[in-house]
Amino acid sequence: MKAFSLLDLSPIVEDGTARQSLLNSADLAQHAEQQGYKRYWMAEHHNMPGIASAATSVALAYVGARTKTIRVGAAGVMLPNHSPLIIAEQYGTLASLYPDRVDLGLGRAPGTDGKTMRALRRDIMRASNDFPQDVLELMAFFEDGNEQGIQAIPGKGLQVPIWLLGSSLFGAQLAAALGQPYIFASHFAPELLDEALHTYRESFKPSKQHSEPYAAAAINVFAADTDEEAQVLMHSLLLHVSALRRGKPGTLKPPTAQFETEANPTELAEARYMLRESAVGNEASVSAWIKQFIERTQVDELVIASHIYDHKSRVKSISIAAKVLQDFVDND
Image (cartoon, rainbow, N blue to C red; front, side, top):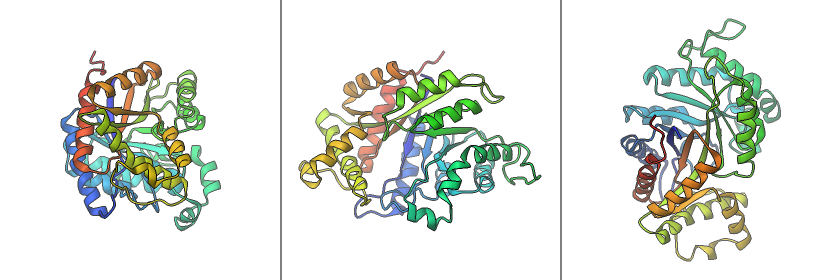
């Protein structure tokens, strides 16, 4: 493994505010920078009461200003929600402010529901079908511009690194065809992880940016002093996912020992299945789990998500994870 990075969904907790979530995100990024994480990622979601990173480029600008060396990026921007020119300008601006520190991951999903897509003024079917062409158009803006001579200012010539994201084979196939790095969202949709990584590597065509495939995968980490404490930390996300599946998104609730009484057993079982690519436990337990995951997937980079209610516990979780992950990085 070559590196490890951090995905922060900037959780808004029960009785909390978006402001405090964004302040916590900057603090989390500072800790990640000190602990050897190569990249700090945020993701675009809309109409989600529990996530503060909807205006992803704005949030990343705030984080970038409060860090010095860690790369900051979107994992990802849901490109069907935007015109390629707007995204090129936004991330060109970030790359101008933070040279050689910005990455741009692109997803095809809307990151929201149908009614919110309409509020975003986007045609979901057309935009999804146009995704490959929009990716190419966006890449062109980071070089010289599009075929009509339109330029992204800032953006032109900055060649911001493009990543493709996915939870199906489509993203893997597109990343391979374009010769770009690929991240699989196994932290919430693990079903096709192994097949997608195989497809990406087998189909990869070298590009002028990348001569070889570079595959990453996202996992959840809930790390604490004891296995029991770590299991409790995960309760908040299990309840959150259960509520999402009921169509009732909300803020992140505090973990409780009696959490199983707050959700339908079937919903909890489905949530556990969705979140099965999760390392949960003390340092030794997390290390053993991650070792097996890396051996199985042979990923070049591991993306860690620690969606935890208490900010201090979240900082501690990524700190334990960093200590573990350092042992798996190939420094040659």
